[in-house]
Image (cartoon, rainbow, N blue to C red):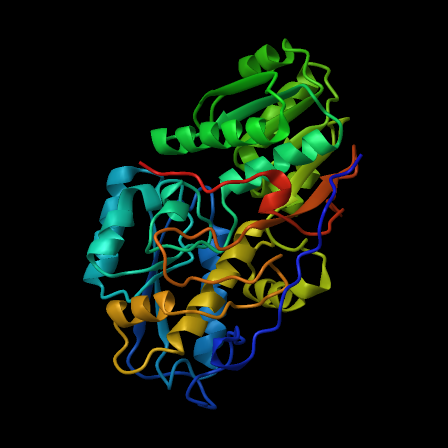
Length: 397
């Protein structure tokens, strides 16, 4: 059977705290912004997440063309951290040296883990496009647009359980101890909530590996479904290993796989592949403005692009509330002073930065599915939230 889901109401938000269209200038300028630039930066692992900063740039370009902030354009600096801690730290130093007033749309495997204390020390906030490591969701100066891999993973696993599967086998990749531990904490939360125990669990692998032996070993646990917690290209390789093994087990994957390219790449697989999308399915009408802007800017449609698009809009909404000089401190104060949420039906719940020591601002998911051989995603829906999957915020150490 399918998961029992509760539709989450998305309230309309009025006044200055409502999410403004990215193209609307606070100053009412009718032409392109030509004033003193406002510097904004991002640290991203571009090999894995190129679309998020590309989507941010598209939003900023539209905003600048409509006059920017009182005639001031947003200047966007993107640094590729290559998923390397030293490079990520240097990216952040460069952003500070350039005078960045905020980080927007960052999408990295390690950015928050490496730089969260630097953000606190410099009173700088990060509107993460794709938050990945646990520090993105457990520290005060960052609020990701997305649900993150740990909420996403538990939603995906609970979908499998509610589809009737009782012998789940999971292969999860990570490159840092904090992320690996967070996945294990998520697993413990889910097992306590569901009363089930994983039939197989393999968290030994990094990204970009040969997963054939791992998949075959997991199959030895008499699995009735497979859960692959990794990025799209790696999951394609895992599904390829299943195909080689002659398996057609149902597969459950994360939102990182939710894009048309992934679906087209797994047409040879003879089992269904399901995901818990953290934003509204790409073909839904609530994405019309997003799709139009991404297509005009040549940005691939994906959940990563959705995250960047929303992060940029959330940042612009906060920027418009700053009174006086635009600095990292004043933008940080505006973000943390937010008391009314931004409503956008691309998410299943209203989103807010606001005060607090941690931010799991997006906490909803929507089931999507690739039927065997179809090569396309099908929307299942509707929205469901944290209570329905037993998700608890994960600690960071």
